[in-house]
Amino acid sequence: MTEPSSHAGLNLGVIGNCQVAALIDEHARIVWACLPRPDADPVFSALLFKEGGGSSCGVFAVDVVGLARSEQRYVRNSAILETILYDSHGGAVRIVDFCPRFHSRGRMFRPMMMIRTIEPAAGRPLVRIRLRPTSHYGKRVDSGTPASHHLRYSAQDVSYRVTTDSSLSALQEERPIVLEQRLTFVLGPDETIDEAPAALADRFLTSTRDYWQNWVRALAIPAEWQGAVIRAAITLKLCTYEDTGAVLAALTTSIPEAAGSGRNWDYRFCWLRDSYFVIQALNRLGATQTMEAYLHFIDHIIARSSVGDLQPLYGISGNPDTPEIISTAFDGFQGMGPVRFGNQAASQTQHDVYGSVILATAHLFFDERLVRAGDQTLLAHLHNLGSRAAAVYELPCSGPWELRGQQRPHTFSAAISWAGCDRLARICSQVGNKEAAGSWRVTAEEMRARILARAWNSHRNAFTGSFGGNGLDASVLLLPELGMLPATHPRFQATLERIGAELGDGVHLFRYREEDDFGVPKNAFTVCGFWYVNALAAAGRAEEARERFSHLLELCNPLGLLSEDIDPATGALWGNFPQTYSMVGIINSALRLSRPWDALV
Image 1: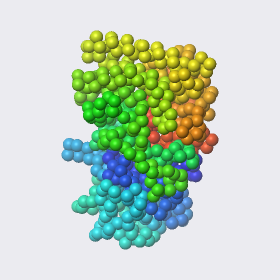
Image 2: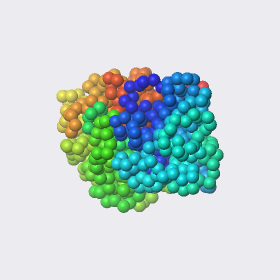
Image 3: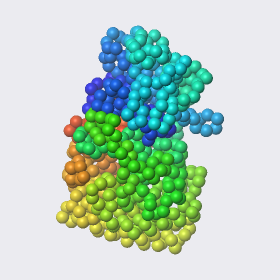
Image 4: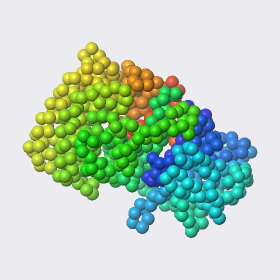
């Protein structure tokens, strides 16, 4: 049962098929979806209006007259969402939402399509259906052009239609109707559907359910926390754009990191750094096809870019142009603007980008499961990236948190650069080039020594976030993960204690506490809590890590999803949603902490 929660309006579920995606609130209102792909014009955009799901525009809602409560769940091991709305008179409505995805005619069928069915589950409930898409980035509400069995709409980049067996006049006039039989709505391309909507929905639902459950069956999940890992894995898959292999950081734009903070960004892009951690987590679960698709995306990027032109992020088609604009057509999430489309961080200097690409593509030289192996052409590109990483790792940049008003020589950026050079030595050894392997080992060892020396602050008794700085930064918790030093090293142990004391707030962890371009951060950064859990476990404090991990899982919304940030005082979710970094945290911590299967079964 859905009760008032502290998730700050992010009590949402996600459906999708790796071509399109939608966010649905606890009352089955579709409040966010973009067509024809996740970075396009939002046709359902109520999430960015002050009234949210109750907004007069940008929503696909099923309003039950006399609504008393709701229940919501995913169909087992799938991306199919079921919501039951109960009225105060004993009536109930069952709503099923999904995006078709299954194998057909030798390929993956993943159309620009969302399907919704609405049926009475008890009594004769009275419902009002509101279908109010926006277009041209919130500037216009489209009432639809009616035909015999569909309404036609036009967005900024695409025309589409909603085909239905419902009364079109009741739909357009938003008249309450007694729900006596199932109604079907197929939102898809502006093309004729020859099949009856109900029959098509049934057929696609069965095939889509089978696809997801078979996909989950192939995952190498840990023995413990299986449900959380499965939901995280499905969610990460939904945040990929299969046409190119790109991985989106999140499906939304401009959900503020904290109330009234102005930290409102568009995350519907592919960050090379973040994506490495996503595909690494999925690979650990055995989802190699997603990893291989992303490596294909990376290959295209580096093949057409000079080393100096490599950006921190790209559009999901691989487009390097991501101009940032502020839209005045939207109120902003809960009335808190600005609303941004595009992200100017693409033009920033972030030195971790070179190592991130090397770390990701290294799989092509080691993983025998992959169809395509790394070759000499790719290796030549990686040599260039490694040389660039070694040349700039000590120089100031915007860093992993993409500071807009300042640059520093960030410890994390330097560590990723080192990791890239270290992996190049391993790759060269793997392909039999002993001379190059030896050269890269020397380079990596020199870098490692300088990084560990320059990042250490004896007065703070910790590795700090930047060379010569005093501020702590949660990203240095990843030094053992990258292989720079063991978590049992005395200096890392001291850093772990210092970070826990100064950046911690209960089970939450701030990324830093220093003032940046927007002041001192007010909310904890979700994935940092998982980084701390992993560091504890690696340092030999496994039981403490397990306890913290269990508490972190309790912070998920009722459907098991997380956003970018959390208010430590209230547990409210903030920031873009669902955040891939956060879902990766669930997977990595569960894999590290879970007891082996033979200890449980």
